[in-house]
Amino acid sequence: MSRTSLTGLGLLVAVLLALPWLLPNSYYMDLAIRIGINAITVLGLNLLIGYAGQISLGHAGFLGIGAYASAVLPTHFGWHPLLAMGAGVAATALIAGLVARPIFKLKGNYLAMATLGLGIIIHIALRNEAQWTGGPDGMVVPPMVLFGLELNSDRQWYAVVATLLAFSAWASLSLIDSPFGRALRALHGSEVAAQVVGVNVVRYKVTVFVMSAAFASLMGSITAHYLAFVTPNFADFFHSVELVTMVVVGGMASVFGSLVGAVLLTALPQALATFEGWETVVFGAVLMLCMVFMPKGLVPTLAAKFGRGE
Image (cartoon, rainbow, N blue to C red; front, side, top):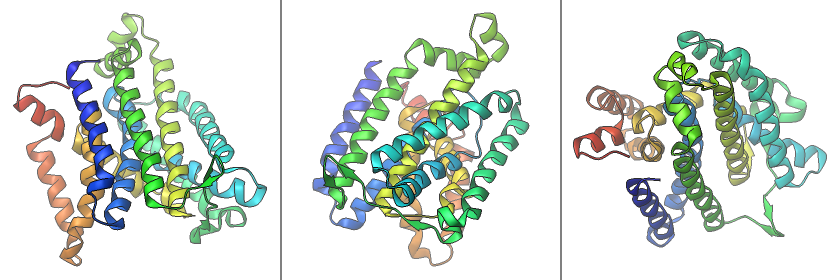
């Protein structure tokens, strides 16, 4: 891991430790938790899009699987929340592994449409199976219990999410600097060239897709328990687009770009709420300006300007 990456990771840990003492009230604590959840999800998605160069427009579907596993299994079958969460991650990884091979035979727009279709199928299934999922109205999620302690305060949830975020950032940075990460970058640059030097293109595509899906499922479960309620909107197309936008705006193939993108796109709609009906227009204008003047994303553009690499 490079010195810059270690410095950035240390700064992230310092910020996470300081935030609970700096945030003035529960509203900002809630916003920090939501940012952390989105950041972890986007870290996994960035491995797929930013480093491997494989688009996914249905990633929110995996969030939905994790969220509903943590709602349905404890409610209808009496499973422990941690066991249900693990089952959700395992089921998501299995589904992702099964569909990855046929999907990743496609490229470009065809790949985007295939992943979009997968996300739509999951969304429709969650919406229509009303006897299990509550249908469009959603359902209540039982509380999370860790070591006999029920998580019911913002500070407890912040501690869980902040720990997961720090670990996820470290794991992503370590993975990128490993032979696996170098293979992903080779795959992104040219699949033909990667095959020539011995990279098993199909295996790496499938592996990174399963990993990013597992990230999403885990955070879907965390979100469901934190909010204590889940609806099919967890898995809708617009949520998938929002996640992809976080990757692009922050900077593809940039771990810290993913974090910045999650912060901006989670906090910005809240900051624009005072525009009373125009917030979506202003939000779109901000994103458009970012893409016009910083097409590589915020962090890579600023890093290049100041002569630094991540």
